[in-house]
Amino acid sequence: MADTADGLPEPEPTNATVGDWDGVLPRDRDPATRRHRRHQGEWRSSTLRWAAGPPQDDIRVRARYETLPNWLAATDRGRDVVVDGPNVMSDEARSYTHGRLDALNTIDGKAEPDRLWRNLLSSQPMAFSIAGHLRAHRDEAAALLGAMTGLDVAHLGTLAPPDGTPAAHMLEGVEAEWFPPRQSHTDDKSGADVAACLDLTDNTRTLITIEVKFTDTFSPAPVRWTRYEEHLMSLGLDEEATKRLVDAGCSQVLRQVMLTDSVRRRGITADSGPDGAVEAGIAVVLARHDDKTAKRVANTLDEAVGSVVPVKFWSHRQLFGEAARIPGLSEWAQRMKARYVLK
Image (cartoon, rainbow, N blue to C red; front, side, top):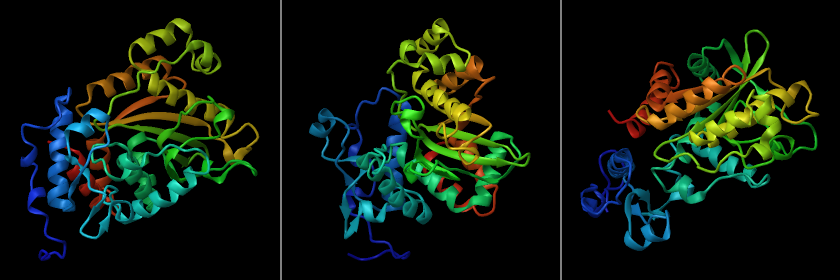
């Protein structure tokens, strides 16, 4: 098969456009999901030049669709989707992702291979792309996170667990799929899609936890007062206020907030000392600029607990737009924006 002028293999004709799927795409309840499914298929075809692959959503989707435009084939013309990692958006991020997955395996971390390597609509490759690229450009990352938070950031810091705690719990600047030892905090599967430790110019440290959304929705699993009473009270909530937040669909991000606050109060573990401590925490929901649910959840929680842990909404458009202004991040940010942000 002939190569194109830029040296990439010529795409297979059947995968040149998403037109083959017109009229047979899944009936996405959210019109935004359908728009982004088509856009990701076009990006896959024109930019990645990678064949479409079989979906791994649920059994009904797999039974009906042999391939979908937003799924990558496991292999394409001698290229392997895991080894080459086209769903992750820079060489730095791909290298980080492979190492981070090995580390997560030692602490029962959460990473879903098909979502990460093959699903173009998943938020997980976005999270690894952000964390992996920013930690490789530390000064630029400090400038970006300072601009996004309004904090006077001196540089990225390290949140270190004590000796004897698995090293994978360390927060070295910026990490994807980060969580502290579970038994020291909320003792559940809570974690941050992306987390950052910021050393500020006043010699304090702030923990930023980021819930990354793309077309996915929030988990409906409710926060139970009887299980989390201590953590909820520390946020200034009582049982009635907690129920209102649960009824408003805030449970998933409330778990993120509880974990952030627990690290603020206790450190990465109770015996971690100053190397594992922070003075403040901020919880962020990073989502599409038109995701009204994500905005509402962040604003509702900020009104309820923001005096303890501020809860902020950041859009992809805002984050990548700010990154594009920073030399050293601009090219990467433009690629991220072209892939993830629709006009």
